[in-house]
Image (cartoon, rainbow, N blue to C red; front, top):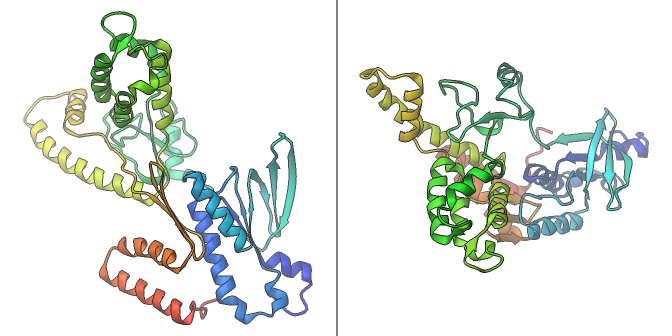
Length: 377
C-alpha cells in the first residue's frame, strides 16, 4: 500500500472478512484484531488505522451458537467494544478477488443482498470431503449418504464394509445415531407387559435393555428414568403412548452429531488404539476356531464397548477476553488479562513435549513485554 493509493482501495485492502462465527472464526478474528490494534498500528499513520475493518459473517442468529447463549451474547458485546463487525443470519453467495457477496434473512422473512469490498477472506464454516473420502463414499452409495463426512457406526467402523475392517475418525467421520422415534411401535410394545401403559419399573427395565441395543444413547435413555415425573404429564404414575413419544423425541434431539473439535478426534484415537489392541488378542483366539465372518464380528462387538464421547468443555478466545462452556449450564467468561492467559494455559498443557511447551511459553513472554515478532511480515 503506497501513499498514492486511493482511499477506497485502502479501505478494501484493510477489510478482513471471516466467514463463520464458530470458535475458529471468532478466535481468528480476535487474534487478528489484537495484531492490528496492538502491534501493526505503530507502523502506520492514524488516517490508515481508521480504515482497518474486521467483519464476521455468521449464518446463524448468534456467533458461538453451539455454546450457551450467555457466552454468545458476551462474545458479541466484546466484539462490539473492539469494533469487530458481526453480521448474523447471513450466507455467503460468492467471493471474488476484490469483494464478498452475501444475503441476509430478516425477521420478517425478507432477504437482502449485500457486497463488501475485501482484501482478505478466511473461510471457517466447515470442511468438505477430500477426493479420497469422496471416492470411498461413491463406492458405497447405499450406506454413505452424508455429503460432508463418512458415516460410521458406534464402533467407528465405516458403514457398508461387510467385515468391519475399515475405520474412520476425526472431522472426516460422523457417527450414525439411531432415530428411536422410527421404532416407537416396537419399543412401546417391548416396554410394557401388563396394561396399556408403562410403569416406572417397566421403564427402568426397558432402559436397561435399550441401552444394550443402542449403546450410544445409553446416557440419554437413563435420563428418562431420572426425569420420569417430567414426562408423566398427567401425573398418574404411568407413561402412555403420547408421553412415550415425547421421551423418544427428547432422546433423538440429544443424539446430535459430534462437534468438529480436537478433543473428539483425540478421544476417538485413544479409543481405536484400545480397540485394535483388543482385536489383536481376539485374532489369536479366532485362529484356533473355525468361525464365520459374522460370528467373528459379533464376538468383537461383545468384547469391545462402543465409542462414548465425554465433552470436557469448549474454550474461545475473544481478544483480551475468554469464555468457556463446560455444559449443563456451567460457563465462564472474563474480559481481562487473566482470562487471556487462562485460555492460553489450557493449550499450553496440551502440548506434546516439554520442548514445545518451553518454546510456546517463551513466545508468550516475549509478546507480553516486547509485542509480537513482525520480522516475517
